[in-house]
Amino acid sequence: MLNTNCQFLSADIMDVLRLFGAENRDFVHTFAREGKNFINTVECGGVRRTFADEWDAIDELEFKRYAKRSAKLAFYLYLSDESGVTFPWGALTGIRPTKMAYAELAEGRDFAPLFKKLCVSDANINITRLVLAAQRDIVNSNRGRGEDIFISLPFCPTKCEYCSFITAPFCAVERYIDDYIACLEEEIASLRGIVTKINSVYIGGGTPFCLSEDQLSRVYAAISALGIGGAEYTVEAGRPDTFTEEKLAVTAAAGVNRICVNPQTFSDRTLALIGRRHTSAQTLRAYEMAAKYPFDINIDLIAGLTGESLADFEHSVNTAVSLAPANITVHSLCLKSGSRLKEHVGRLEVEGIDGMLAFSRQKLSEAGYEPYYLYRQKYQAGNGENIGWCRPGKQCVYNIGTMEEITSNIAVGAGAISKRVFGGGARIERLASPKDIPTYLNKVGEIIKKRGELFSL
Image (cartoon, rainbow, N blue to C red; front, side, top):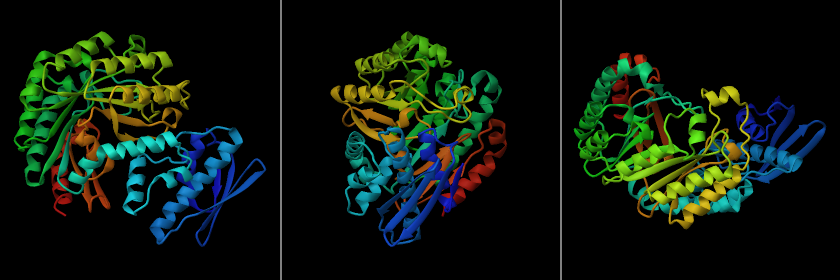
């Protein structure tokens, strides 16, 4: 139990306690401010320590931001000293390290001193710097200009053990598909009076290739009617066992220029354990089929999957690199509420996760890939991260726009969240659609009305 004299600090402190598996211990915390000095006293089991550090807060918003950072750092140092354990991201628990880095740069400061103060490793300071360099042209070109479009197709053949998305097994919702597509068509048509300049379009899931080629063609036709020009156009095709020549052909004909093949691993044993019904051989066939078309291809991998060893993960990375796709995304396994994994595991303990991530960074760098986007989630194995890697010039515009929140994101479909970005990211307003598919179908008119109001502000 945490007892603190500043309740607004509780959530951030708990993030650090969970990092060390200390959330069930009894802590007493006292926060005080003396000028620029932010003073945190932490006590547990009779061991009491006081930490003081300087933060130059000029207003109430900055005061609260710095108070949270100082409290997290105090608990991180207390628990790290006690356990002898350190983490590569230190006391930095936010999901977008790059956003903090951009904020420092906007103030005319290098971000490295702040990251070092928060105990971030030199390797992660360097990877952040590389990501910012790879993003520079797209951020400078698109910040505050135009929109990214997201189309939600939340259907999958089965649900993986780690998945908490709203994705539904296709067989359970197949009866809704035609009505769902009709609603998407209506929503997409309503965007004609909203969009100004489309930077990118991303059809995501789930596994969009669960749909037939005729159903996909309806979605593509609705998007084409928006007049997207030469914008980046991605379909997160998904699981290899849903690929067919016909679906790839209609996808290419629609002008899609980027697709995702998401095996997560090239181990058949692991695929079976996580609930996938395809093999690594099917992934290779799907990739070969897709490579016949002028797509930039992304491959997703996950480090830390159930039962995987370092050697298993190295095999997956090596196999992905041998295919030479435009993008390879490496995720750290994350324990998410609503997933089957969460039901069976209270805390992620993945042996060798640091070695897995280190290997992926080294291998991908040596193969000519560069990190171009980075984000983190709570409860990731080893307090890790997700990094998108690309060949030079193959950065995904959508991923940068949505992760860095530099442009508005207009999202349609069940569970989709639209974001109106004001002032290049100074303020963001959101509109979420219902996750439940029947509820979404019944409220699509209301969603269209509310979105129109949000984007007419």
